[in-house]
Length: 131
Image (tube, rainbow, N blue to C red):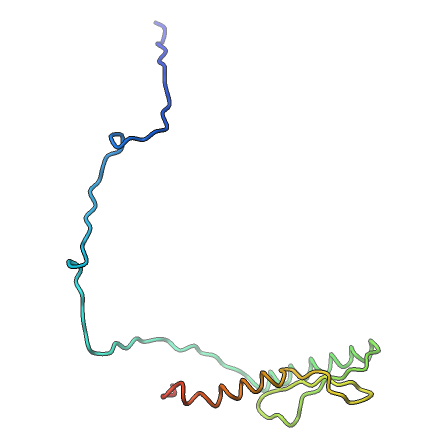
């Protein structure tokens, strides 16, 4: 017996009759339970354990500045890098011309230092409790 040949047509249209319909239960806003509490909610947020070794950072900065000064001398440039000794607590690097002593650049620049100082002064106004 020879197999029968059937003609197959492809229809890309989808009708609502070809897909079984599902009912989705939706709640109206009036049915959603609302929990109200006047007590403040405290959440336990773990603190980050950040440790900064300022002595090690200062040594690394001094090593980097010495390396930069050697590179400037070997390259024939008249620039020198130094840490500003008048600034305590925050390292400020000064770039000078060796022959004239003129300050070419300060890192971080004076505007950034002013903003940092202003933010430090505003801490008490922004936060009323230190954690």
